[in-house]
Image 1: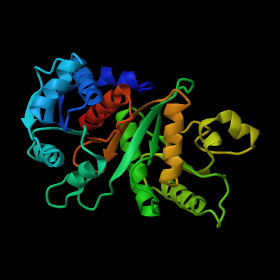
Image 2: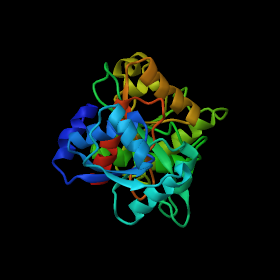
Image 3: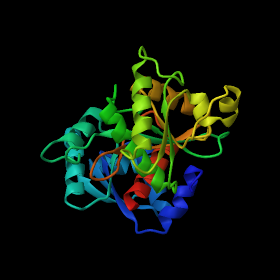
Image 4: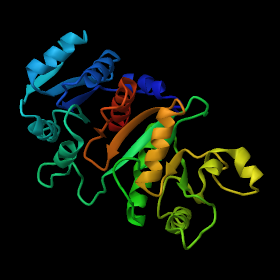
Length: 301
């Protein structure tokens, strides 16, 4: 079981390398993260973009890109389409967002004729968080894509999160359906969904995990808090996966983890033909590097 993000590297190095295709790989953080992933031996690299700009940034930041394939596309709006096309043609196993804006990147992925979204699947986002004071990684969803997930979308979010947890070596992950309270309250719809998801897990409608909810965050991750409140849970205060009721709660958790709690993160877009890395311009090189590693790990699984 992988308990720290850097432990992913040991697993990936023992597998065949994946090829990473970057849409508009022209910014310093992306080029540096991609170079680091290449040096660590976890991916080969294709950068789609303006060769002059790519070489200029690489030279300015002293990054050796001599072993990278560069596919010329000088129109910024076309880079995501070209990158997706390369993936569809079997010339890459992992897609990554570079300097291209998020809306353009997502449109290319979601294109019905030429995109990467699997038929009848839901596009979602799974993040893996490492906290300095927590004893293992937490898999969380959804902090970036689905604004107000329906019950059906939450089922898919759970399934994707289980797949990521399995890739991290967790065979039967414990899934906490997060709300503000532990009791079902008709005035709080997230508690109703949580109770339904718990029953679905118990009856085998969602396989491969132990599911409980509704749960407040503290008792989901702390046995001490669970005991103090006098509650029982099959997760025993040791959840592997946190499913949030909406993007607001998930995103606040994500930003709190990285900005105030010293957390490190890795994240992938799920539901697509291949893992897709979607990072913000504000994300650190570490976050982009570990997201590449996670995508390679999931692709290998």
